[in-house]
Amino acid sequence: MIDARNKVVLSQVMLPQQANVAGNVHGGEIMKFMDSAAGAAAMKYARCNCVTARVDELIFHLPIFVGALVTCTAVVDYVGNTSMDVYVRVDSEDIESGRGPEKALCAHFTMVAMGKNGKPQKVPPYTPETEEEKQLYETALEKVKRRKREK
Image 1 (cartoon, rainbow, N blue to C red):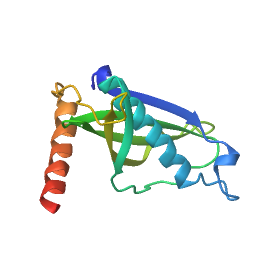
Image 2 (image 1 turned 60 degrees about the horizontal axis):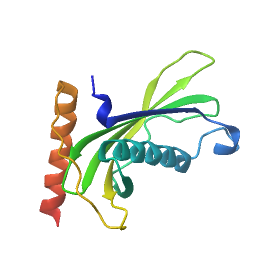
Image 3 (image 1 turned 180 degrees about the vertical axis):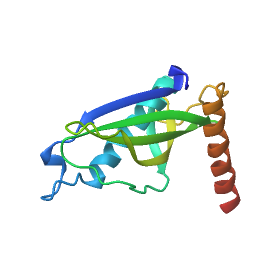
Image 4 (image 1 turned 90 degrees about the vertical axis):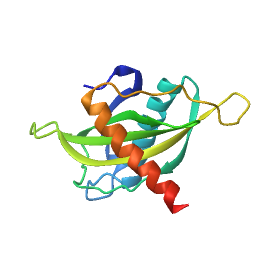
């Protein structure tokens, strides 16, 4: 179980204006929803405005259709000095058939805490407590280390 201090869950039903003529929801709609969830989780944790600095690879495992209930679960899983890694998982559920929820995609967002002066500000330290938090933290830490080596 993940502590509520660093987690946000957003859900919405996908509507026709969010899709193409075949009823597939546009990827950009899902990306925007994920960004909103990541931003909310980061702001909740940091207690200030946060902006998106990076989004790691997005791979759609399942199509999402009009009428699906889509749920984004965003968790702050790693904290640096002024930035946070936020893991966002998207689940899709067919309300009519009752099928799901199923994992449709996931990604890691790098969010930066912003002060009222418009400059990055320090984020409170983070210590994972549950087993799930520790797993997410280790995955995020490896990504951070890899990015630093690549620079």
